[in-house]
Length: 128
Image (cartoon, rainbow, N blue to C red; front, side):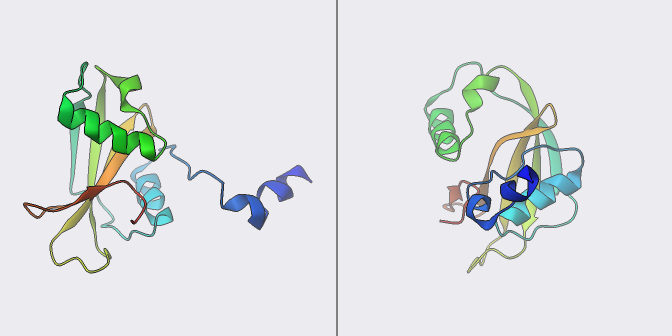
């Protein structure tokens, strides 16, 4: 049947991780698909406004988003929720590492994995 083919190993590599969000569990599952173990509950949830016009910093942040298949410019001027989780299994991390997920209309529209260290890193969902 067609359903079987969709789930065949050949196509599973290219299968996109679902960015649909019905509950917080879907956010945890999304991060787990990238190999991250996170706290069950988000550390914080804040409402953020995607700026109408991107400054240099936000422009660079969006370039990172675009490299992982998201584009925040589509949501310019919109309010979304930012969920922050603590990553508990980041390889070699001595400081706290967090995962930020931006959610709009029950959909993950972008995010990052960041170190809380002063001169720490920020990268997309995939482990570099």
